[in-house]
Length: 224
Image 1 (cartoon, helix red, strand yellow):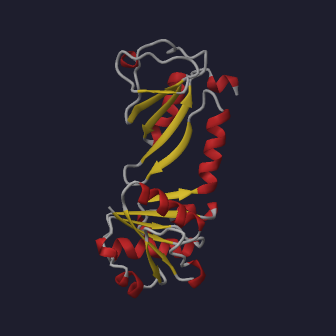
Image 2 (image 1 turned 60 degrees about the horizontal axis):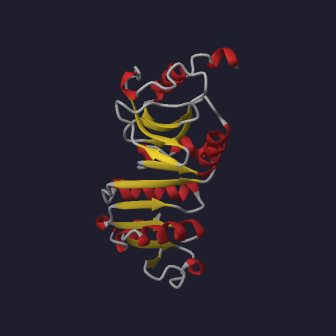
């Protein structure tokens, strides 16, 4: 897979290293000469160019990329890069970095962004996930599928503690994908029971999130 990353700062370089370790081809693009440091990610391609300029993206041969990641520290630049990648070069997948939470609403398909990554939101979700029991916590949003990756730690008083997954009337438009228990990852089968303290990961529509919470923790509202 060929991946272009706009922004060769600490974030862009870290992403590049991970992708290269996983066997992908990576092109790092930055308009600042001081950011072009091939020795820092030796196996990547480097291009001194402005990713907001159409001519720069043509030079980068963006049409050959499977993914474009807009990872600069400027939200406007990330939006323009994503939009050009999607509309002018038909890149199949774009990922946009959100630097300021107030701009997150802009990072949608209308601006060519398939997936947005908001560092403040992720950090907040991780804090909630670590300390919250009995609440559904949204970890990640899949823009194209109108679905979210959500987590819930099952409370001791849940009516479905000890019940097999196949006997639980899960809401529509949600799927239990993983059970985390005692440091182990379990694949949910119809016979697999859930236990108090389990971390349950779902892919769910926004509408079904409250239904999951009500199903597994019906006393939630009264305990607030």
